[in-house]
Length: 110
Length: 114
Image (cartoon, rainbow over all chains, first blue to last red; front, side, top):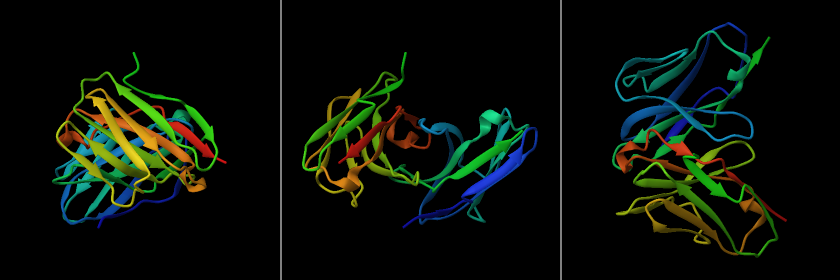
């Protein structure tokens, strides 16, 4: 089976940098995705890592270490609109179906 | 244009009823999915479907069934609704099965069973 661990809640102030960690256990790891979901909204795709290293997309970056079964999402220059839930999702080879973590609620304070 | 759309947005019904949720995507994607998100925001895959294969999460009761009239549509039928079926149901699509790491979600259908 698969399991993912991510913090349930993270708080930060506007303009700060925050890192949301995700550790996983899976038998056939293919990649790690990140999604953002605002309250009442739908998950939206943020980034994907299949190889070790950092992927940067604007203010958001995602990192993966396959040997450590670990990844993180880095959000820079935080804005109030970044307050949302962030989900990591492990993609297993073969089915390519994601298994989502339980999400991290990010609260950005002024 | 909405990429992935679902109807209805809200659905309130009584236990024992049968209901359907419709999903359409205009992205030209090959693979579509149904997810259930519970009150604690846990997002669980229910089905994955393309024109070649249906993958069912073995924990999904057989009261739930996906039906795909064509590549752009994947509807969800639920028979004999139970209180525990209350949740938000999301439809999603990806370009192809192997592209499941990047999915586009519909706005969700909030189902309330009374």
